[in-house]
Length: 146
Length: 419
Image (cartoon, rainbow over all chains, first blue to last red; front, side):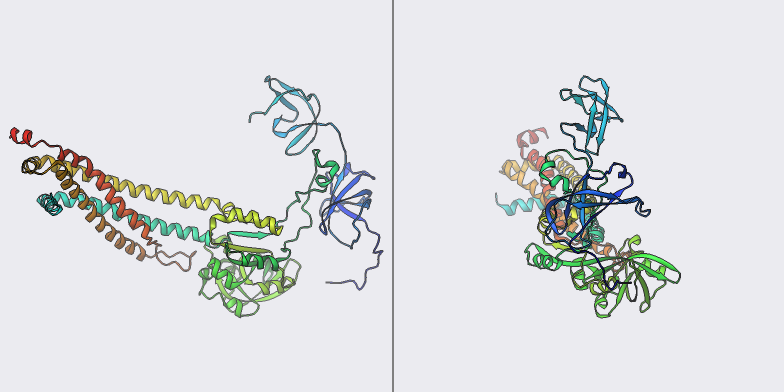
């Protein structure tokens, strides 16, 4: 293996480098909040801001490199420390979510009266689904029978 | 009435119809023989099959799994803690395979009174070079003596001296299938290439047969220090710690405790191999059921024969009663008959069962998968003999109970007047 004799750089100025999958890259904007944890500072959360999205995709991993600058940072840092980061894309207060298993097909829910109703869904993961319109807090829904 | 007289009367009744007695006793003998032989064989086979997996698997495995972190930063921040966060494409962080602080962990485990032994291990995926072809394989770096003591490593090594691995430097034990693929014999040198493209020659000292062909095609073993050398890692580099406990049932609870204590992933044997326990449980249950059915059938045989005897000997019983024997005495006479059939039949059954097991133990059972097994496995567990003998007494007692009661109620006046 070839080892460099020396590496030149500013040992006080650091950036965070993150890998973002091509599926998600369209949602990333400059200035979005980044929350990160470090293996070397267990249990603490720090903040940063998205500064730059490298435009060229890495073909091997099908991901983009996104760089972020620190807002809060741990006192001592070293090059190449590992970071786990979440980029906050959207914050929505008072959103309505239902368990994923209550969603029938792509956009239907079953009301407790037995009627089906069409809803507009927003974000979803394997546990919960955000309901944008079509359902209110007071509606009662039933789990869809499989 | 004194006991000796009762026994003598029972004896003469038994001998008067000795063929019937013999048939009844043979029934018991046969069922006990089959019970013992069946259970010994089944249990031996169970132990062998379970041993294939259970002996070789650690009760608790401590390792670092490559998986997404469940403590995502956004969930830890006060601001977002109570809200629901949709997180997209969570990736496995930079988790390393190496166990952090492994030396201290092993030290703590060795002092734990519930732990029988600890064996460290390194898993190293490599390529075996055979001319132009690369064969993928795994080298496990093991502590040979710990592995032999805890996981019967030596039993699966043809030639049975795994310590060669420790004594010969840069040596390797190849899986049988892998050796065939590489056409490597003992004493040959095989070239391995690590994932970082380093080449390393290793000397073949033994072959290994796990009993699972697929595994033998990829597995091989070397000492821990050899694998650390191949990978270019320091001497505290360990990827797995295998723990064997005194009580296997404690594994799930202890696995959780260790996961918390050492901040690593743990896996207990019950979770990893749940189906094995179920399999052996069902096999044992079936053999017990068959054995007990045999005994119950024999019990009905005894019941029939005693009933017949009472009808035939109605006059004798009436005379016995007329000459001063009480109902209880007659009852005792027939219980003695039943129990002696059970006792002698049972004893003969135990003897024949033992002989039968010995015969099974001699039948050759040679399989390429198990180098150390030459004949059918038999488990000479005294518990089976105990269950067999007590069950033979219990069934004959129950079979004799109703006929004996009937005999004790015979009214001598009615019987004799009827003649």
